[in-house]
Image (cartoon, rainbow, N blue to C red; front, top):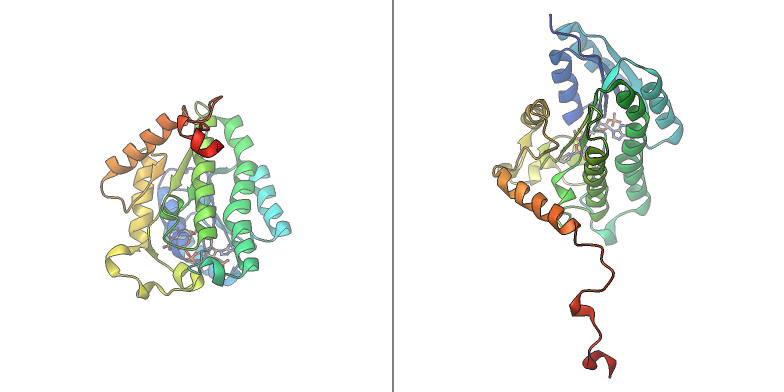
Amino acid sequence: MTEAKGTALITGASSGIGAIYADRLARQGYDLILVARSADKLDQAARTIGDATGRSVDTIAADLADPADLRRIEARLTNDRSITLLVNNAGTGSTAKALDAAVDTMSKMVSLNVEALMRLTYAALPAFVARGHGTIVNIASIVAVAPELLNGTYGGTKAFVLAFSQNLQYELEGTGVHVQVVLPGATATDFWEVAGTPVDHLPGEIVMRADDLVDAALIGLARGERVTIPSLHDVARWDAFEADRQTMAGELSTSTPGARYRADEEVLS
Ligand code: NAP
């Protein structure tokens, strides 16, 4: 029997990356609360995982872009002291260019990818910090640092997830609460169909299997990684990028403009 680890609440657990997290975390010894809109898929996943692992698997059908549904999940996170791990995975994307994108679809994406993730994190944190123990896994995307690749609103939502997570890592230092942000590259899930470009339209060499992605992310988590980019082979690239960003951060606020902006005679005349 695997050691019990408390309960993991996983959003977007009805398919793709979230469904794999559900399977793997149950096998690691977590009880589960699975959240998504599709009640039937959640119930099926709960039966399969419960039978295979013997863990308790609860499901909550909720549209996280709907404020009332979101508040229900927040309340569960606030009140259920068994929860030790939150996986903020639910999200949608788009491959539409700005001029072709439907703004209401973009707004809904922001509600799900940004607002729901932020509110669920805020709901979970107080109990985690009070207990001195807890984990939050936020699923971002490589478009957080490569916004030219897909729809700009989608890239913006994932840049939020990265920045929000990095701030929390800084603020929560020493509390015992760990925040991991995962940046998947293209992964073979329904995401692409929903986003407007079926995954088989992508070159196979850039697409990872969802189980490989999640298994790699969980190895990163077990090692205490803060930022995990499973598809980046040379991690020195990220380390250099991040070190440069942190060094530059100390130079970004000064009392005078850079010399290149001092008025010269050419501009004044
Ligand atoms: P997916 O198979 O389409 O899964 C998305 C999950 O989110 C489903 O369980 C879906 O379930 C749920 N969901 C969608 N809208 C929801 C809503 N309004 N309320 C609650 N749940 C909702 O795609 P995936 O690839 O596994 O995506 C998971 C995460 O990975 C997303 O955050 C995505 O941005 C990120 N990601 C994916 C890729 C990729 O290439 N696949 C790359 C980078 C990052 P219901 O439809 O049942 O609600």
